[in-house]
Amino acid sequence: METVVLPRIVLASERADSLALLREYADFWKVPYSLEVTTGENTVIVSTDPLPNLDDDVTVVISSLEEGGFRRTADTLGVSVSSRNTSIRLPYSRDVKTFLDTTLYEFSGTKLEGVIHDGDNTVLSHLEGTNCFLLSVDLVSDYRRLLYGGLEDPPSLRFRLATKLPLSYNTIPSFIRSRSFRSTTTANEPMEEKLGPVECLRTIFLSSLVVSSGPVLRLGFWKRGISHVLTVSHDVETRRGLDVGWPNLARIERAEGIRATWNVPSNRYPLSASDFNHMALDGEIGGHDTRHDGRLILLGLEDKVRRLRLCKSRLEQLSMGEVRGFRSPLLQHGRELIQALAEAGFRFDSSAPSWEPLSPTSLHSHGVGTVFPFKIDGVVEIPVSLPQDHQLVRVAGMTPGEAAGRLLALSNWVAGIGGVCVLLVHPDYEFAEPKYLQEYQKLLHSLTQNPGCQVMTLGELADWWDFRNRAHLVTRTNGSLELRGGSVEQLQQLTPQLVTGYGRDGFKIEAPTALSISYNVTYGDKS
Figure 1: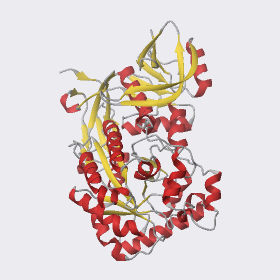
Figure 2 (figure 1 turned 180 degrees about the vertical axis):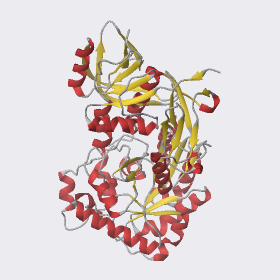
Figure 3 (figure 1 turned 30 degrees about the vertical axis):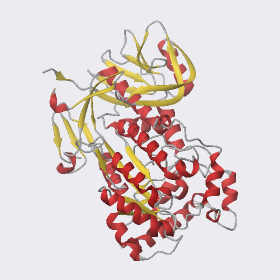
Figure 4 (figure 1 turned 180 degrees about the horizontal axis):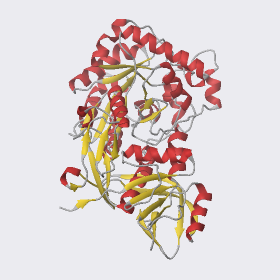
């Protein structure tokens, strides 16, 4: 059997912040890489800048920065470049496409050949007679815009004025609040195209490596035999939701073998220790602010920390257990809020949606553009990847049956990309009512039918992603590979994969053990 020679991957940029984002791409896929720009056989360098005076056997993939960077690259290499706004659709697998709305910088010249394209757009070009490849997408700026820009959801003036009223917005009847948003949203949004544009960027990064340099070794996202994850979560907004809705939903989940995460506001309605006895057995407890009045996002950092600590300590006192996770009311999110969560002692958060058509806070669509967790300021952020029941039923006006159908359809895309299906259902709303419980049970049953689906609580998911963040493949000087970052038992749960090609059916992936590979993987924490 033919021996597979793996490339030495190097990341390079003249700007430290850009290099940090290139590293986030590589760390997401868990490909082994170096930051030391050296030459050598079978080396591929991913750079934001043209690199002169390299050996002929070194491959360079250039992802330029902003319009000025693309023009400098074109001038250096003697080609032309023009820009236009477009929508890119690239396959992840045979059945799943990724989507990205972006500025495409089109290179042109007699010696350029398109090697990755979607029919209408050339994403990667090869300069004939060289080992140079040119990306037409600004991987760094688009990633920063979508994920870190999407992490911010600035409150609108209308929202700020509403929170200054003497009474909380909660005093306005729910049906009036929901109806006020209906004219600006639609149940027919093409949400598959909105949920994961960052996944398209990540697809471009990995496919460029494979097409330019050959097979690449990476680590799968989940434990061996697992293709994707489902986590079920509930925000218990009212006492009625706790008294009536929670037992109804918990009974269904118990029958389906699902442990959920229950996010509870600590000071909005009367609570006692007995309220948490069965809830903790059926899953885990998370924080949901103190009063659920929408004002958390408007506070300064110190006041945020103080309020979050109060929420955490009271819930821990009542539940007699550690409260590690949080979800903010109205899915409010922002970098400063995550910083405050870290200082208050929370380990994970699930407040930012992948995408929602309307934020009650900013009155615009919002989201971080990914269906995978990511770590920021020491906190694992787990995006709400599926639209919450409130948006589908109360805002978009769907019936619970229609909402369940939409959730199932979107979950198929998330599962196909290998991501996390984060389901958010309130025990205060329709799905918890007796006449709709059958719809909820059918939804859960359908979501868990795929044998590759693993059900986790948000806390279990955060623990796994934290571990995977620490795990890494290291290339040794003798060419062998080591897997580091945990105990032998932990590391043996990871799934090394060999990405051998990319084309119209997406990535071609094989198990490395099925090939004769010139390296050894050592399971153990040798870091």
